Amino acid sequence: MQIIEIAFGGGAELLFDKIKKHIVELPPARKYFPDADIEKWRIKELLIWIKDNLLKERPELFLQGESVRPGILVLINDADWELFGELEYELQTNDEITFISTLHGG
Image (cartoon, rainbow, N blue to C red; front, side, top):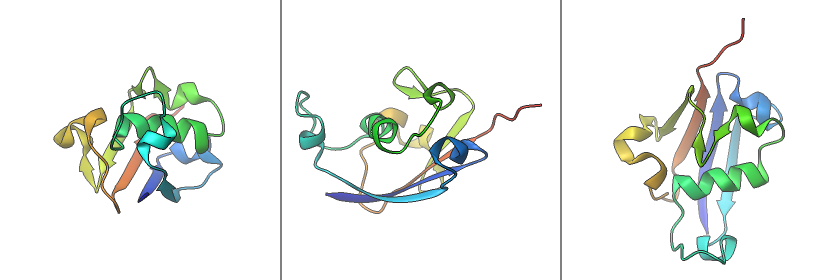
């Protein structure tokens, strides 16, 4: 089991019952994805878990294909996920993954 913090900001929290921070305990990746040969959680799998377990409404405003939609900044421990390989980053216990919407209506 891995414990991580998932945070939402910039309006993204509205899709998650207005809850900005979640401390989650992820099950073993192999147990959650029994049909895939996955040993460790990556951001790619985390997005599926978030959709299945935290997302309350309008998934199209958060996800596009296998990734987050454009306009959502993703931080891993306060650094841009591009520095860590984006979807391929392997989660570590106590990581903080933050999703910030940079899109605002008018």
